[in-house]
Length: 239
Image (cartoon, rainbow, N blue to C red; front, side):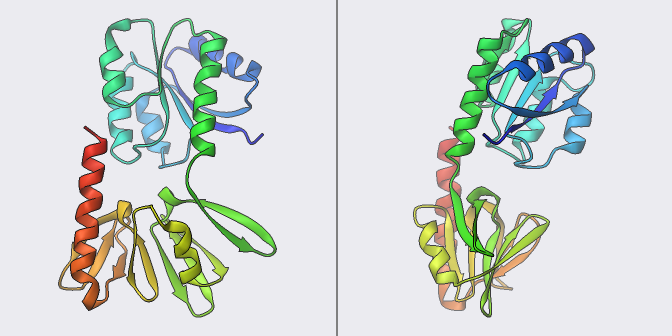
C-alpha cells in the first residue's frame, strides 16, 4: 500500500509527538511532514502535495481556520481534519469542507477513520492513464493544465512541469469524457477547471499558471459556453 502523504500542523511539541506516535501505529502507512505553525505550512504547500492535512485550530500566529482558508484558495480537494480541544469551531470545519473534526486527545480509532477516508478519496481520484516505456502512468486529471499534440508525441502539461508520451491526443481525449476538458484546437485540449480567463483578442485560454492555450476561431463561442458552464457547476458545488 502506497503511504499517504500527511501534513501535521501543531504548535505544541508534545501534541505533535503524540500525533506522530499514533500515525506510526496506524494500519495505513503514512509519510508525515511536521509544521509548528500555519505560516510554515503555507510556505511549503503546493496543490496536491499532500493526501491529508491534520490541522490544529488554536495556534500562535495564523489559526488553523485561517491557514485552511488560504489553502482552500489554491486547493479545494485536499482532505482536512481539524484537531482541537474546543468544540466551538465545528461550524468553521463544515464551512471549509473539513473531512473530520477530532477532539484532543486524539484517539487512534478516530485518526484511522480519517486516514481511511483520505485513502479512499485518493484512490477514487480520476486519472489519465498513459503508457511509457512499457509501463502505465496515472496522472490525476485535476493536476492537468492541458494536453498538446507535438508530432508523434503527446505532452501532458502540469504546473511547473510536463510529461511526454508517444500517442495521439484523439485517443487520450476519450478518457476525458464526462470531465471538464475542452478540445479547443486540433492540437490542444484544456482543463477548464484550470482556466483563469479567456483572452478574446489572442483567442486563447489563459491558464492558472499563466500559460496560453490557443482556441480555433470557429470554436470561440463554444469555448466560452463550456467555460461558463464549468464556472457555474463549480459555484453550485460550493453552495
